[in-house]
Image 1 (cartoon, rainbow, N blue to C red):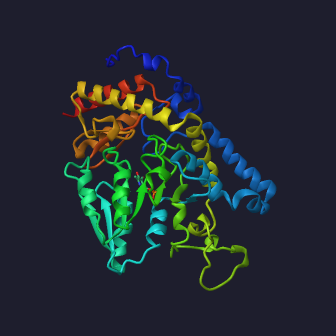
Image 2: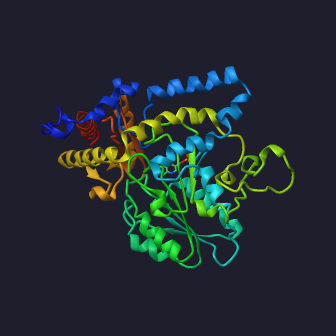
Image 3: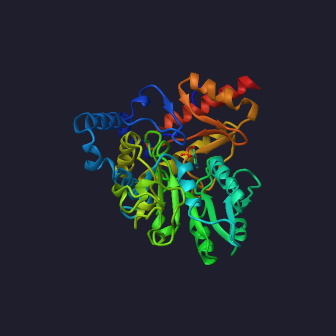
Length: 397
Ligand SMILES: Cc1ncc(COP(=O)(O)O)c(C=O)c1O
């Protein structure tokens, strides 16, 4: 039996459902996993064909005809989603590399050697920070009591005049908790610390403006809400920092005159190019671009309005089915995913059974089943997912 959804005027007028045609996988799959890997847009196939055609017909000339500058021209498409000025977002392979670039801008052996990180941060970021201990860094994680939220005051309190960098996951991957970046950045700047925001779980689903927030660095990737292919991470750096920062993790593309091939110490480019390193991942950028174009065409505030409505629908149906919600109930405090708690021992089996039923979600230990509607999701798919999940859980009891 299918959970009845009260006739919903919002769904009846949901023009975003017309976008379903752009995503072939939606024809046969209930795709609730754009917090992990979004569905491929049809346009991505054409974009990848453009890559191979360009390579085939233009050969090495492709570098000067666009490929070399692609980390910044492609980055501009993300810039308009996250509020960065033109030329301030550089593409890199992934968030982990961007974190390494940022942390390599600082010395960690002096008195200002604290790196404050939120306890809900993505583990990859933690691994990089803990590696800085051998350079003298003190890593200060701010814990979450419930595995879902972190009191803002606790984070603000941890930031002091020994803090060099504050790392915040804008939306936590484990719980969808949306953190107050503005307040955290204000506090960090009061004491002379820098802020790096991980936007992977917010860009494309939560409206944000890195310029207005004042964050110093922001990073994220393409495969989730931005509906791009893998290997296309991005880094934003606040323009005023070019004059101050020299990343030790570097390469020839960061040189002021890369084609002079000068040996010895680098002369950094005066602008965002200084945060590049080696040869860019060109096919990845072709594979990711279409998703950014679509998100730009729709607009993140339109996406957010639908997301808040549908995450509320998910919570309502989960409550009715007696499932336990591991995400904030206040729509202003959550991103686009709803996490439903299940016993850790059963999580992967539940995901596998849902997969057999062509419903794609995932599981994170200590958190639960992550379910993500996006702009192409219908209300029926949400009801279908909750019905299937409760049915599977009953058979497991
Ligand atoms: C919030 C967040 N940050 C970072 C990552 C990992 O980024 P990457 O694989 O690009 O290093 C993920 C996800 O997979 C994530 O959810």
